[in-house]
Image (cartoon, rainbow, N blue to C red; front, side, top):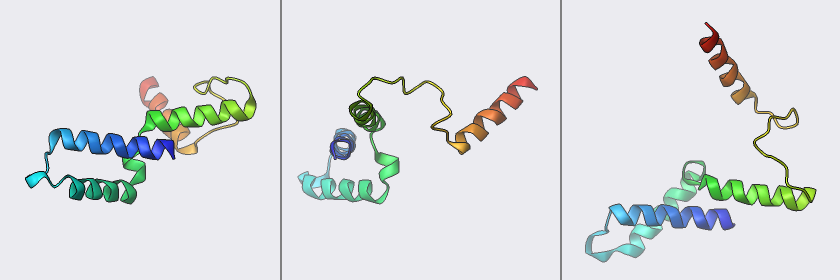
Length: 93
């Protein structure tokens, strides 16, 4: 929930800095931005906040501070493995 609130706040702040609503229609613009977020959460989610929450939960569960950027066989995304493999082939060619 913290990541969701931070993501929506960031979206609203960013939009209102560059797009002042006509006739001070801030409430309408905020509703529109909330709807925009809900329709595409993956697009508007604030990654740093999500990562921080995930890291905190992992630390709380494991009671240790693992290096989440270290390569491991336990968590592997096949799509990313394919992309990196293709990049290596291109680089080595």
